[in-house]
Length: 140
Image (spheres, one colour):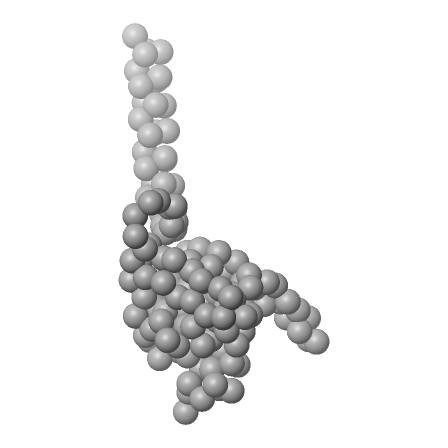
């Protein structure tokens, strides 16, 4: 009987630990391919992204993506060794800072996730975080 009580106690501790750990994991939005019509489309010269979520700044996003990467999902390193990733050329520091700010966790190399993050940034007045925004006249 004593072993059964200890076993039950151990099982309850494991379940409680899992609830705590899983409850604190960041949520990641993942677009799932489907035959449904896209909610939004952001496209430019020779590129197009169909999205499963609404986009509020599509014209600005289109111009930024065209300037930053021409719609190509690329990574590059500047002369100072700073690495930029994805269609919107996020650097790791900015991406991490925005993950914390918006509580949206993803990958800057995943185009839908990069577009979603950038859309939130633009809506929050952070367009100036892109060098291209300045050269395109999108900031003051």
